[in-house]
Image 1 (cartoon, helix red, strand yellow):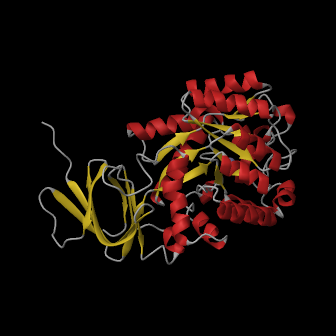
Image 2 (cartoon, protein in one colour; image 1 turned 180 degrees about the vertical axis):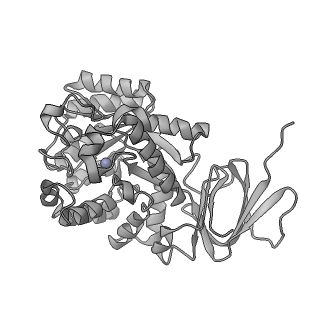
Image 3 (tube, protein in one colour; image 1 turned 30 degrees about the vertical axis):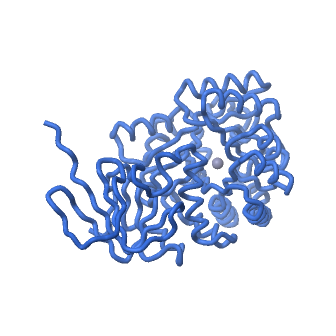
Length: 411
Ligand SMILES: [Zn+2]
């Protein structure tokens, strides 16, 4: 005998969705994993066929989406993670990181994986119901030139250890790396086009992949209907990636106006990642990270701020991403919203970035990112009105993922 799950009615004084704006006194009806109806709130209690969550002074928003996280690898103790921790242990830590994001209202994560296939496995374990967690899109291994950003965390003598990257030299190798990742279950591809901040021995201002390599990778990814995210700080890295037609550029710290014009012309998303820079800067100033990080992070905030403001003014689409990589910071993802508002977005724009724009960036706009009838029931409630006080997003009252209540502080 098959038994239908009871319908769930969620009632609140406010509902916000980027396609509708703010609506007052609404109730959402959830059937199975979908939003079946959105209607004016009634005072009817629950019936045998439904249960009701009545939140009163709260705002319902679509489940939040973080387009850039590093689950499992704790950058606070990077050497230990890379040299001592087993891939299995990293996988368990990734599950803990992901679950804390979910409880903070992030029902979808785009995970930049690293080694060993653990993010692909975690995605599948969550889908199978073995562990509780958000929807995960996994990158597979980073694709980079030999000696690139992902290689630069340990001395070259340790290069027999698997750091999670596929090193490519030449367009054919880039093509092969994309095919390998897709074969191993990647949802999208992550390319490393330039040096980085946390990595020793390279500079964020230099490029590490050629235009031909990036173009070949993008062509191959597109042939398989996969999107491409590119780590790029250096301006030239942003330009060659945008020209190649990648999906999103992460950081884009040293982009100039011409680079942003290219991004707009090619409909490339900018993923700014203020939160990780903030975390790195404070940890580096307290002597908690290697010395070179302090030198590299100084001055980047002003650059990133300029890029963010200019991109917004020029109409480049900005998708929310934190780049969280410190184990104890998972679950604080929404602080990025506060940093985006500080940097010049209004609250509605920041919420659009973390819902509708992020869903578009991930190619999931038909399923998530707005509260509409027929869409997946990923729903979060924040106390009061986050459109007036973005800090209200720090702690959700309610989190529903695929129609299932995973957190209810109102109960
Ligand atoms: Zn990253």
